[in-house]
Length: 109
Image (cartoon, rainbow, N blue to C red; front, top):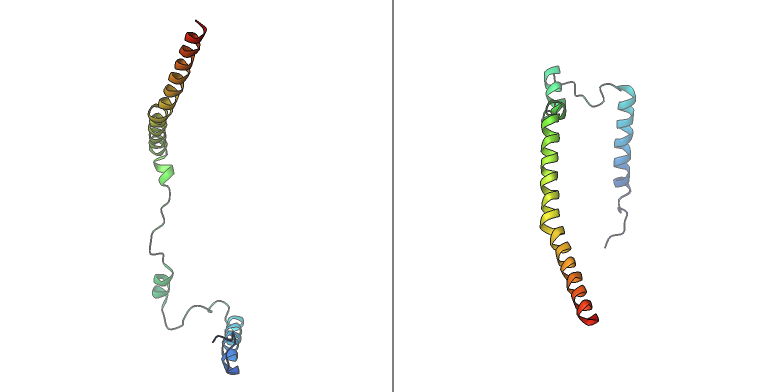
């Protein structure tokens, strides 16, 4: 059964003491708080180095190509929608109203 609190009072005291020591260390050594003295400068650079190089300048370098590809894909998709989907619905609607007009013409004649 979970009571929500540990039964041992010392279990609550351990994280508090750890945080207290950490805060004291940060106050005493603000710049060296997260750097171990046992590593040299080269290892420190390796630790802080990004594993994936940032991708920069791709849009600036290939802006015309990116815009051309975007318009081409957009135009192809719009054309497919217009001629493949929209015109079928319009043709069905026009055929329905043409048939309705023929029925009215036959009724009136």
